[in-house]
Image 1: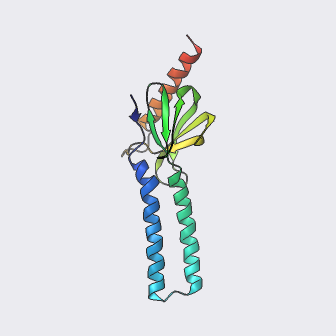
Image 2: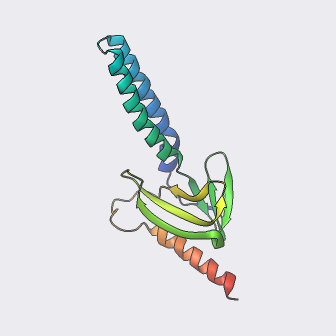
Image 3: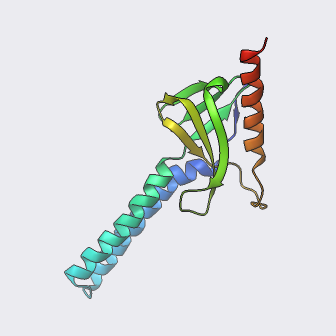
Length: 154
């Protein structure tokens, strides 16, 4: 039976944050234009700076995937597509701070090329004690190791 291992926050960061960022961009531009106090060069500079920051955040948010697991495989989804990847095709599972961000993410690296690329990122469930490895990392590594051993040793 499939069990979801990625946090529900994954969906919020993947879909909610982009909507919020676009809303702030529109409100900022409308506010600057309606006041009439900003020059064209100030508006252009503000648009470029905010647009650049928003593009980086959007890229990081869009790279998050939703992950489920059963006894034999991982199920990776981006909301539109889903791919089943057997544990034997998983190279490693590790945890780190989100690329240049403050959120913990889990990285899964594959031995093969998937429709999502050679590695994916997902957010584990929220924890208060973030100085230690998330238990899901150890659990996934254990599942991978036990599955890989049974593939080679009868």
